[in-house]
Image (cartoon, rainbow, N blue to C red; front, side):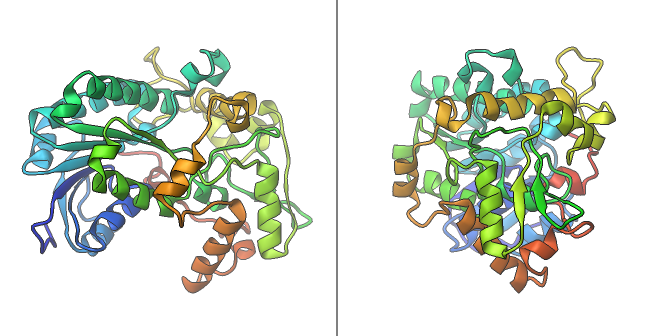
Length: 373
């Protein structure tokens, strides 16, 4: 199944129908500089079909846990972009398959490999157990390993780079995320999250496509690079102030304790269910984490050692050099999102955060936290 009309270099994409994968693929094919082969479990899904409609995209049915599907994906490809959904696979499964995917890419002759990464925050914190978040550490361990292989000699055969992100800014306006807004009885838009006064390295999905495209466009400079991105070092107090400035409606950050967050926060119902942090991770496995354990670690990463305290820093000079027109503040992001929403008929931001109006942004929410690997 294909809409390709070019002999441009082919990029095999794993995770193409996810929140990050869609803008990445758009950026690769929008000027027909690249072709994309996107691996998907369901070629008939609305997300897969939206990719096909872009042009220069072909869909490959299969899963990242199938070596035959991976070999088919790598066939005749120049490069690959890999972003495994840790909330599907879980930390243990992602560790094995991310490494195996890298090995198969080398075996199959891929020239440039980009790994969708997150910070190895547990290590960066000095192995503070309060910061253990499986979806961060699973990716972060693999990312370090890939760079070690690249610098140890594999980089001469296959270049590799990490694309290290963080929580999406879109999650602050979306349904059923760990940072969804809640509207109080007096109409105040409230982010009740346990981040304290620490900054969080939020990412704009729109810019993800540009950054990944840059990595493929500049393979010599990108080889061995860990490109760590963010909008800005932003507190949730600043997020609320930016929302209020753009909408003219009252907003606030309510700094709650973890106990209060898990009792009445936006993801409290998930934590109270006792479910695993990943829907294909079995809690009978000692390696698995509960949703509550995982995201307690996530919030502690920022509260105990956020960007301004050192171990989650970003190089904004480098980001400005690579992407001069990147989104650089929460206020700028809200203004752009308000404009996009109005053009799409969704209304203004304040309308969109009202009860019943929030929409999902993460694929796992659309899938109902279920599905195969």
